[in-house]
Length: 237
Image (cartoon, rainbow, N blue to C red):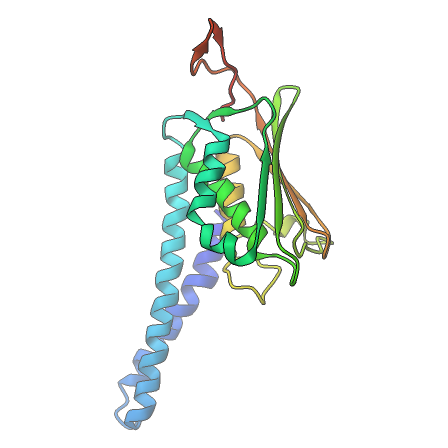
């Protein structure tokens, strides 16, 4: 509700107010044609901003709906390879290295659209926020710790100064590197989807030393399939 209140008060009200103001100015016939053309241009720009915010709202609402989707068996290596294939031009352009190690946890039971989105956003971020002149490297690994599954995403990128800002990194439209194109939706969606799966996500980072995201999910036994009479233990939300 806080995030939606923020969107309404800041990201919806501003373009709407601008559109209304410009529409009022356009009713004045005293302005020359060139000035009115500029008004029209600015109006369309605000309409595009408004459309972008509505699209973001739809994505957030859809995320809340998708969690009701049926869990399925997901091969983690295949998931990462699928994402790598979808962003292969970006990987080639930046000479990115993406490695993964899942030890004895080859498969999980979860909502694939959520897991895909979480992995996709964190993988793309590791490449997008690379250090200049240094090929981006990302290591993804997973391990069990008691009744929990830990998933680690560690990169060698720009990193962030989290002093007094640690609680803000997952906020909607919050950005730490304004010289890089983006709008601050990715990490917000990651946190939303992790929490909808019943988990938690934390971050550790230092400027020019890379970033480590840690996802914590509680493991449960789900009889997805059997092999030699033994039920395989997978995790769910």
